[in-house]
Length: 247
Image 1 (spheres, rainbow, N blue to C red):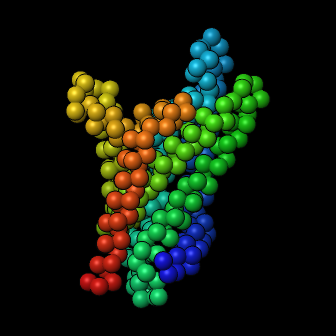
Image 2: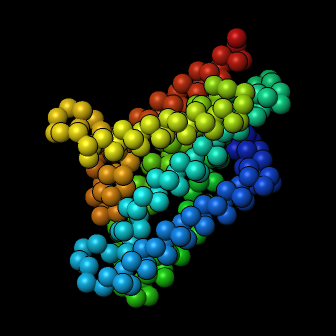
Image 3: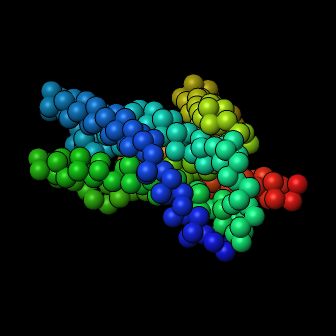
């Protein structure tokens, strides 16, 4: 894909030279710090809990994680295309010798890289826990794999929503609504009686997915769903970008 690295560097620079990434990083780590404190405080007062439910597993399967995703993913992607269309800079990018696929995938890769950087400091939480209890690093790796896969899918949704509008606020709201809808649909797994609808809800449930990965369980169905959502959204985003060039 011609021009991928040039667009990637441009997008990473635009993310980190503005206050957005730093404010988002602060808010995200504050939320994760609160989540970690709640988990540690809980285990400090209930020392008789089963050893199968350790602090790291509880942290990675806590409800703070989906809330964090609803905060981070829409904010990271809202301006990827919407702001460039509003300011008119997208025309210069599309007339450059850069393929449409390179533009989409480079911008997506920059958002995904930033997402991974936001999670990087949370490794310190595991290091802290390791000082007092034994940590299964394979389970920790599986937990971060789950966070990466869910984030990759959610960011792809955000990229598509940003390509569909010229307003960052509209892109933020659309992405949040879609992701919140997926979260609510997943909760239906615990509400509906066993049957086809309950199976669909279980298949898309981010809460169940994070719980599985936090136990070191990697379900192929989860991988297929995340990959399908990510590739599907990126495919349609590329079609939208190509329509700007040839439309």
